[in-house]
Length: 92
Image 1 (tube, rainbow, N blue to C red):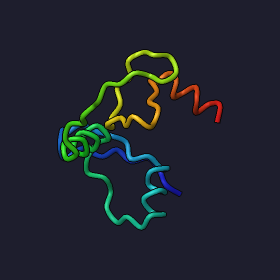
Image 2 (image 1 turned 45 degrees about the vertical axis):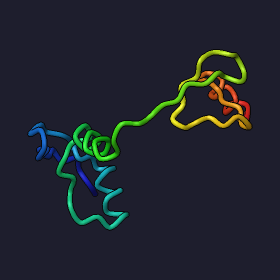
Image 3 (image 1 turned 180 degrees about the vertical axis):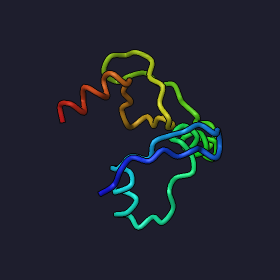
């Protein structure tokens, strides 16, 4: 029913593909307008509005390495580095 369309980004002027799957998603959600920006420009716009993220440094409760996290660690909760956190999620 839907076919890929090539659109031009109003921000950077580059062409991008509005895929059939994306068109179907837009239709399911009731969106009337096609996207006007490419994915890179949409992401940049979103991140600019959000502002820079503050990171905090802590010690990983599992391996003892330094862990950088986007929240202020509390002393009553363990903090894990990315690797240990990924391992814990796999086990759960």
